[in-house]
Length: 247
Figure 1 (cartoon, rainbow, N blue to C red):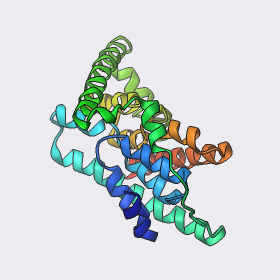
Figure 2: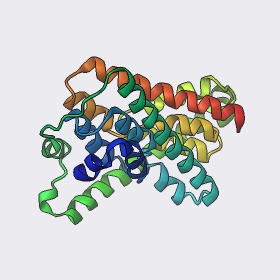
Figure 3: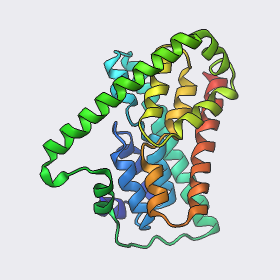
């Protein structure tokens, strides 16, 4: 992956967006590591973050959401990520002449921290991850349904989805939760018709799985990390507001 990204040159955001659309947060972690080592550009990293949807796609498929709706959501996220990535890299080259330097990435350290145990075999590791995600999604969904039933879907819908500005802002804040909980919550709300597609896109565009946690761990420049989170959040919220106005 590292070699392919390096050879992609200025087309890094395009490759990052395409790979990031895969329904898992693993590549956002790897991309964060590569950025921390300055192997990839900021635009490529943002492209991966914006296209990453964590558990959204599996849930949409499980709930038999129409294929047209799924492809529309993924298509919007893909275009958003690629375009934003190219613009960010262009601006950086114009004003800063960013130099991407290759350093030793710490992927093994991340794997140890996440307790992947890949040395036991990819099948065992995949099964463990799948079971953890399945159990997590079950309990999150159970709690979410209980909260929705108690508060009432109409109340939540009026508070979020009926407000063009507030909806994307709140969804973006939920999307910043650095695990799959945010994508699960937002997707379930969308399936339940509590939030609209633009609001969903705001949240899942900002969501990057555990990538943001890894960013603060591996990239020592805290101010830069805060700026990256701010850029990510701003793009996600603006995209949701614009989509709300035109969809």
